[in-house]
Image (cartoon, rainbow, N blue to C red; front, side, top):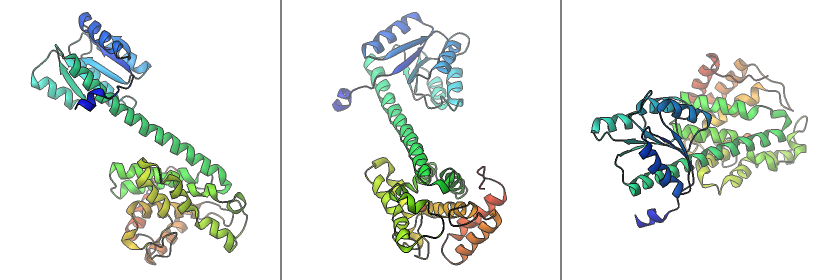
Amino acid sequence: MIRMINMPMPKADILVVDDNEMNVRVLEALLLSRGHDVRVARDGEEALKQIGEKHPDLVLLDIMMPKIDGFQVLEEIRSNKETELIPIILLTALSDIDSNVKGIELGADDFITKPFNKSLLMARVRNLLRGKNLLDELESVDAVIAMTAKIIEAKDKYTEGHVERVTEYAVKLGEAAGLEEWDLRNLKRGALLHDLGKIAVPDAVLNKEGKLSEEEWKHILLHPSIGADILQDLKSLKAVVDIVLHHHEKLDGSGYPDKLKGDEITKESRIMAIADIYDALTTTRSYKKSMSPETAIRILQEEAQAGKLDSELVMLFSRLVKDGKFDAISE
Ligand SMILES: [Fe+2]
């Protein structure tokens, strides 16, 4: 507990929404003294306007206000994709439990009853800001991953749009297969990064017209391990590493690099394999022309019958293709 108190508080842009001048002044002084930037809105309408102009890192929100009350402001913030994750603390004179329950149900992160205890309020502000910082970091991880995906693609001129398409195929198949939100997030990251190791494959091999020699194939076969090695030390990407490493494994052990079999291959990696193969079949590569979706699906089904791909997932994927569920269009 003592360690928590000593932990530094991230500096933030905080919006105070209250129609009571006295409260505003006390809160403003308190937050400024901790180095935060403070904005003030005197009613709900002004609060929504300010939030629309620039998203604050945290909102301290009074409930009883003229025009639009705090509950409505809360609902507005939570129903907008752009603002739904902004931390909100309700500041209220209402000490009745029903109002507090209503606030939390509408999505408030916390509430403080007035007159408030300054230390308690600041401790709650600090905790919420720390959570927000973590979320922001996760978002920047995704931005770096998206950028890396573009670098990977730029290296291989025959696979333009491949990463984007494979990611869409994999995520929609993952959804259809009932993956949980966190697993879907990792699948998406894995799909964006699956060919990261191609960074280490010579351009002459990647962009070669026609068939590859045995020696050249050796370079290609190394790309899953190289990609996994690059990501190995990034703690937040542990689950993604497995997808990168095993997206070319086959259920009968004929894949690479670890020749895994059956249950040794995770559902996410099986999904990736199907998405990757389907895109390879339906696009033109240096060594072959593109196939129609129907032909590609037939080949996936044959691979499933031969025990190489997961039949249930191939069946789900075929249905998604037939039902026109994909926005991505292969050439
Ligand atoms: Fe690959």
